[in-house]
Image (tube, rainbow, N blue to C red; front, side, top):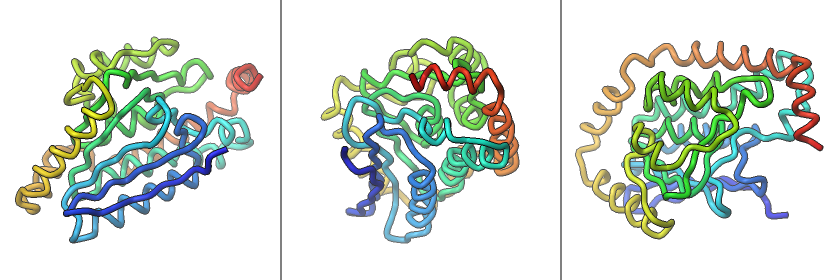
Length: 251
């Protein structure tokens, strides 16, 4: 089995963060923690003007949290820590002073949708359908919901959350504001992402920093909000409903 990784590369002021996991690019806690540290470090690096966030391999951008870790949770404390993984990533992206471009080449589920929503400018392929499947196992997208609602609004978030068994197309996500543009294939996506990154890298860095503050206005309470949401999920995941649902998925 291929080895999971997270790597970054800086070229001409553009930092590219790439992650990979053989289980549909799901993100276990160690990769989430590494992602937080990487975003923080690159955000404070004067050589970096703009960030690109992408995943490698397969047809899935990110399948969300690690299923293997999810089924191993035994108490509320460990549950809260587990769900804080995506909360910490979203908050790191929110606080990062640099513009973050999302490159979404394939399907996004759960936390993967949250990561896409937390980017400042998000480009995708037509294969980048999205789904919030949390209700199917008895929890909800509590941690990622604020980031998603900020982009697509409450009505679309409600639709996506309650229709938990179905994927919604990249065009639907584009129409709601999650994606800024949708491309035919991965090559076109890569070209568009690089062009946007190069344009941003040539702009006044101070102007971009100030714009980022404008884009994330009224989210100053998210450290506390997402922490509280992680606690809700950490409690619900221990319910008998969720335990039985996870057993069925495991089989």
